[in-house]
Length: 485
Ligand SMILES: Cc1cc2nc3c(=O)[nH]c(=O)nc-3n(C[C@H](O)[C@H](O)[C@H](O)COP(=O)(O)O)c2cc1C
Image 1 (cartoon, rainbow, N blue to C red):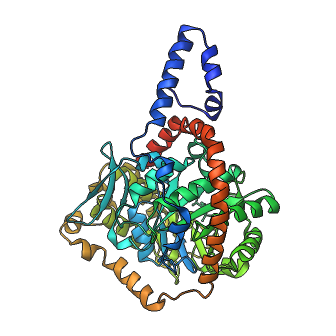
Image 2 (tube, rainbow, N blue to C red):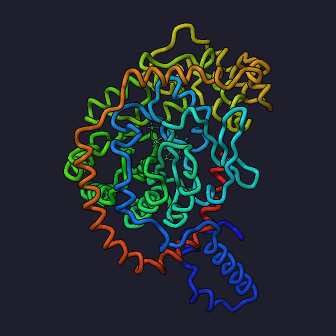
Image 3 (cartoon, rainbow, N blue to C red):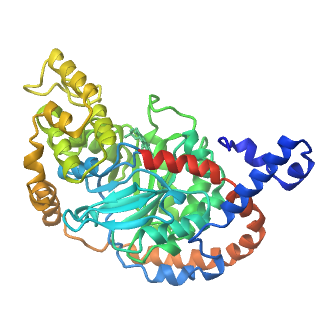
């Protein structure tokens, strides 16, 4: 069956199917029915009646949360670019938390979890494809990002992912405007279905163990009123421990300047609803640590998330400025990628996204680095990279001895990450925010009120849910996208 569009899904009801009379129509009808039942009979989906009781789940959360979202620089979720080598580099250069790329619920459901005893790498594998990989070194700082528009699938996916202690938190993507995400009602589409968005968050909170945080990443809505209503509704689920706002609307393109001034309208609601206790993270147009500081001053928030700056140069998190791509960052990426056995096409893609410019950053305001290669040398790097057909070719381009990497222990390979993380622990011991208790009290009150309403809505929405399950094909496309990334 071809790709299903939102229009197709909307049209796929029984009456339409029954009215179809031609042979082609009958065949299509049978295929659609088969797709529908396949979508509804998903192994691993737990009936809603068996889900845990939400207030008691919330009460069981550690206080304060184990992940410190309050201050710092975070690597943004990035499909294709946010895999393990980029996350390791970001941590090495100073990122406090790292988000993985969006992975859709159906991709992670039913995955096998395989641990490589030699390297420690944990891989979630399905149909011989690695859907998500992580290493214990990032365990306390990695946030898994889920793409979902179906609470039951979200529940099953997060249950599968968090069955072992592999990630610090799980995040819901409510901001991606790309068709592969929105076609299944996921990503930025959730901004226009807030009840569903909140149900997915509740399902994630129910599925994750208490010490695993739940958070979400949204975009701004066109008006202040609409944004505030959405944020209020999300906060009142009592489920999230961090809210990241990409300060663009769904319609805005990346080249259009972000709107950090509008973060204030979100901060107002966070203050009203939680006394400012819910961490609020600003995302959009911060290219490096220095700019992140300016953005903190402008917006008043203390955590900034960086995407394209880190894709161009993961050393953007370094407080003293970015490091040379050609002599330092790219060779280190090759080393990490080889050590964690990252798929060659992805390593090549990530290397090709690095900024081979004298500034080693896409930031138009960045100053040229000392001793950076000249224009001709930069072009040579790019050409050699484009011609590479194997990890060995990539290693040659950047002067890395792959044989030596393979004969070095994982502990030694990851030493720069370990040292960077140890420094952070010394610099910033965990302390309980004064307002945590207030927030917990607010959470529970909201959730108890919301739970009562929710049980009514669940009954009303049963029919709607069945229709959502028909989004399987759209989700499949994303599944492939994420797995291939
Ligand atoms: C290559 C790429 C992939 C992205 N993938 C995701 C994703 O998986 N999930 C998500 O929430 N946002 C995704 N985004 C959006 C970023 O996380 C971020 O919100 C956006 O790029 C704005 O931040 P920036 O100005 O620092 O780039 C992606 C962005 C890029 C450039």
